[in-house]
Image 1 (cartoon, rainbow, N blue to C red):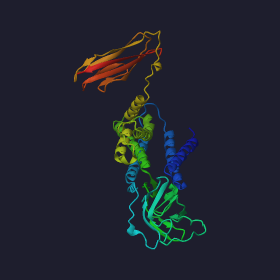
Image 2 (spheres, rainbow, N blue to C red):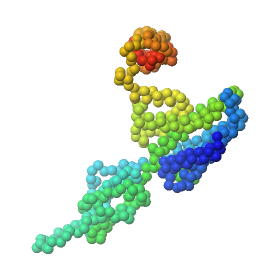
Image 3 (tube, helix red, strand yellow):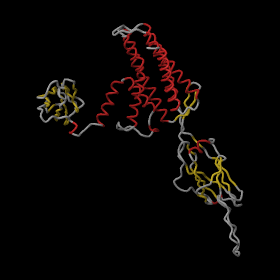
Image 4 (cartoon, rainbow, N blue to C red):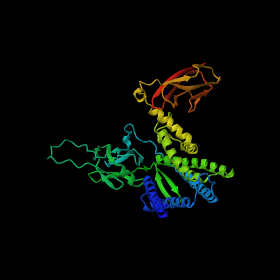
Length: 440
């Protein structure tokens, strides 16, 4: 393989990976993305060029150079992963108190100014939450729209004049026109960008047409947390924290599997050079599989999984993702079971049956059983055209099967259990059969 092509390909992949990483975390600085791309690209180029320099034959013992490279690679990865784990777990989020009023707050008359000047008593909601969408800021108080009318005797009607202009609201130096303006309630709509762009304790003021104003302070809180990686800082949401934690934990779990396997085979002097790429790529397989498993759980495909991000325990997410990475093969089987359960076809037209075929499936297994007594049986085919392929589509948890159609197991609980199987012959004709077992 051409070394220049390897180098160019490695840095191209790295540039894409670095751009995606910076875009996902919302990094506007080109420096962060560029450094990430260079680090990933340099790593890929080193691995590719090293692998290219090694001449490997099937079954050849792993050369010492490969073993040393893998040791350095895995130790470096472990330190990087552990650092990221501590950085992600250390992200702190501040939940704003719930202060949204369900009814109009009480406005004691003793607070009403005697000189008719405006007075803001309370503001709802307070604090305002960044990234919560457009918010109607409700300002409660006295004399907000206009001064009180003096008690004077009736006078002859005066010539019609236009009413005075309504009040305006100034939020963090920006003047806005309220959509509702009353003497005790003024409502102004703030966009998400306006809330997030200002200081954490901006001033809000009522500006009456007669020039009198009154101001108070509101609080703006951010539901994101600060992630610190060396000297780089970035605010992330809880969802991004959990997703990054899943990625890192999946890689860490696969790393544990890889390092145990490598040290065992090196210690027994049975390590084979052709497994080099397995040890290099396995952590990345753990990352991807952990993300898919996490999405399956958060998506509600597994019973009892919480949907609210605030109710998700990050340590539980970390543990599951690490186990998925450590036992990737079993996790893949579990995802296959979920897929079969979600997309299992019940349409009999999907079963390839040949009306001219005499293929039939026989389940040679007792229809009754007792708890603690072993049972064994076998799927057998009659008619059709060999060879036959057997498959058990449904079985109780205590019954195990194999590709040859053998059935073995010991009942552990009483009840009625269904065994469903199918056989496919050499002409792809399918026959199905089911059996109900009564366990007492």
